[in-house]
Length: 293
Image (cartoon, rainbow, N blue to C red):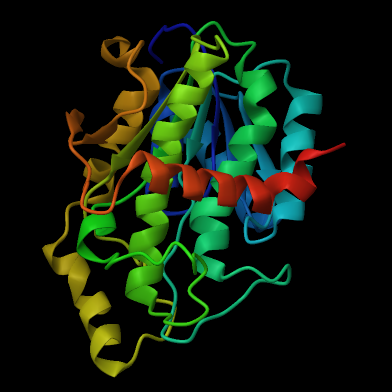
């Protein structure tokens, strides 16, 4: 195991896919890893696998359904009770859903709940333990879909109640995640929290089962099944997350969007400071009931 300064790292959605691989790679460096999943048995199995493969016994897990903001709050409280500080938060969990609009038990559109509201709330709830790190990093996993799938956002209908399409829901959720990343970077600097950086990234089109569980119609179902044949490996898809979590090259970089371990320019077609603030304020409004004691 490589001898490095050990960090405490939480990775959401890390019982599968690139989250799981990222967890293993970081564990192999000797960091304390908090695996997140929805299923306790699966999370326990993944933790044991990581311990066995890396020799690192500092592997913990936390259970939460990130579709539910009440669960996000409980998870954050559990982490804050157990850990004095958090050095890295990787908001990795995300999904694309089917052709029919669905809402969560709390009444939110599923795509926005998981891909946007959940990481927004979790980050807000964990800011105080991140602030205790000498150099904390928040990493939001976005997607190039923010340009290819978003269409023109309707900021008066963020949860797509009128014109839902799973393409637009996914693309816009990833676009808004970039916007709130940028906004948070500025907010942290204004608060003097210069020890916390926040960046977003595109992991690339990855050969996993991503997007194959929801019904999108026959032709698109087949397309999603074929997509992994033309995609990069899951291992390569973890490279930018791993880089942002560990590299000294990005110690003081914040508010940026990365692709292939380099700063890239996100789509700006629909961005403005005003639009960014609309999304930030909307997320804050959604999160408000869960931010109090």
